[in-house]
Amino acid sequence: MRIGVAGSGRIGAFHAATLAGLDAVDEVVLADAHPDTARQVAAELDVRAVDSVDELIASGIDGLVITAATSAHATLLRAALRADLPTFCEKPVAGTLEESIDLVRLERAVDAPAQIGFQRRFDAGYREAKRAVDAGELGFVHTVRVNTHDQSPPPAAYLPTSGGLFRDCSVHDFDILRFVTGGEVTRVYGVGANKGADFFTDADDVDTAAAVLTLDDDTLVVASATRYNGGGHDVRMEVMGSAGTVGVGVDDSLAMRSAEAGVAWPAGPQKWSFMERFLPAYRAELTRFVDVARGRAESPCTIADALQAARIAEACDISRRERRPVDLVEIANVG
Image (tube, rainbow, N blue to C red; front, top):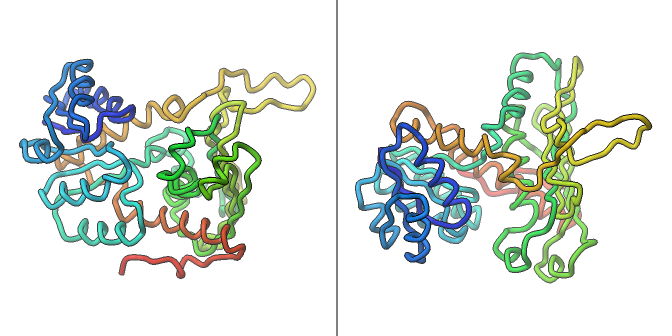
């Protein structure tokens, strides 16, 4: 197998290194909008680089991994699928819902599979939560709590391209919510606030947000996100049912301390970044993608899945801005 990687930044270099270590991958080929960057990373990893993504797609690779700038995702994904190339793409697939819908239609029209990088689907804790729900061990699920709390904010220059807190961070919670519960969101109410740096307000964004979501079986969901969680990177899910509750991310690395006397848990150390928190999951999702590219497995997260998570994020952001509940039927969807 020859796998191409389009984009040689931090996540691209990490994915290239992961792919190079897989037994099923014979060669990794890099390309970047800045060819010198691709050549530098290729030299560090002892893999090959080409001068452009067009050259990469035409080079006879067996699969493509897209880790380029967000603004390039839709164009590259479209080109790869039209070239009948199995493709892995980091989220988001596109900058707008309209583009995402067009990509779902293309996905349906071609034979080549697409896998979108929602890595939490490969995290052991989330997978165990899904198993418990599917097995009925929790009884009927009535409440779910999900949160993505970053330890520190991104650079100010990142915000204008991020899509906002719900689309950038909470979208992962929205995807894993669908994955674990098997349910669909029908209504949301979102709020947000700024208590940190002025550059969030300047970018028409918020540094902290929350939403109440209702699923199609009347399960209630509370989602929260923040750029300021100084105690560590805190990503969790609690699934509460009539017969029991399970928690994901509730271990010694939990970025919290107990206020109860004599309680030493969690012992630490905390996680400080998403890469640290989900390192095994990132490796597992690429291992699966190689199987998808070889025709040995179906895509575990399609463009259609990514669209549904994006629609929830869109609804939450509209709700926050307009200060009203938003029904998901108001949000554009593929026919």
